[in-house]
Image (cartoon, rainbow, N blue to C red; front, side):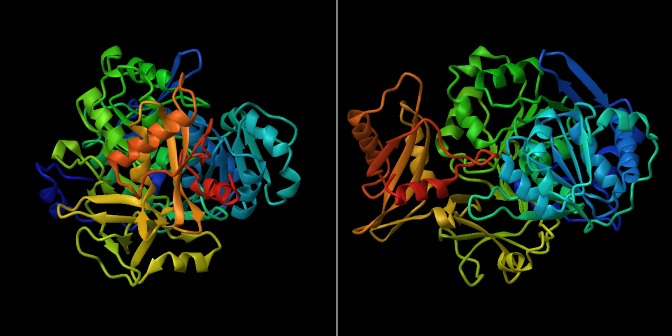
Length: 542
């Protein structure tokens, strides 16, 4: 969608949205390429033994047509919810495409979800169908009696009692299907928020969400779609990051996607995978990038073909940004958004839009500002709420069955993010913290991101989280939860060294007055630290 330009200002000035009257994501992702270039590689599936299975666009589209017919044969109609509890597999993409072709709403669910998380989402969405694997069936067996609306269950690992086999459904169905002529605003995809506060909400998107993502993803991948591009992400395809920052835009641009159903992120394996698969483009969330820092001298040890790496989901921080640049001689393109309205800020090192510690500039086509509580845009360098003006093609339709929550998401025409930030004189936005993550200490308002970034510079620390702990004198004090690197030992001397390290580099009011060494940090399935749990723990005396 982006027209080539030599600089950011020209790129932004040229851009105009042109949404068609009819638009279906499956048509953009699959139907078009299957007719224009049927043999073009769509998905390369790397199996556990290292062997590969290649899917052309023609093969992917035929399978999606077959499963669309199968879904209709099971009674799935436009507007019905089809849930997916699957890792990165070709069948995951096939199920999504089939749902869109029929006009159903896809509801991706993370394989890491526990029973209560699954039960809540399946019940709240009113899913009529679920496509899963053997591991998912084991979980479902314990909650299925609580889900009377779940009528159709399909397993990619074969049939069982009351469960249809994916391959059998495909083989029995026609490979011809006419994709429903939906409008850009017709519902297509519902992704549940990560639930860092309160119960997760179903974020309902129209088919236009893919169009809305394209400029931001093209920008963050230094104009994705060039000859030889090959895309991979370790992000779960159940997350907006895996689907909309990687899988769907790449396929829509004709860029092959490499998938691997890894259950756990392994930094050493990730570098070997990037090397062996000759990955050119990657979306790697900040937490994964921080974990990659544990691998010694990867820039010299591995022969990588990478030309672009995008990252989003939480603040990357200057330490990880600078490490990557020094190690690989090009910067990570950090970008920003939410499940409700994604990829609205971005970076593109090829255009010179890249700044350590910033989450990018406004992506072409999106109006982003820092606003006050009354919805008034603030001047540069002012702390306020990051907000996006509607209408915007990437913006969600509504929260599922929660009209009051939907209304509360807006101040006038500004969709508020719940994120505090500031915009500098050059238009770069700097993330400060979530509204509920901001620490108030002795009248200072402190964002946890800067403290965590500083903590990560300490040679003993692998991961860190900073929160505000209630204090009768200062309102709150800064408390840090720290995961140490292998070979490091917790103790009073290390605590004092860490405090001095932060105090010298930040300020006297930002250093952590309490430090707790932990083995792990509570995280969402998308790799974001759940600071709420740490605050609750600290408030209870932990």
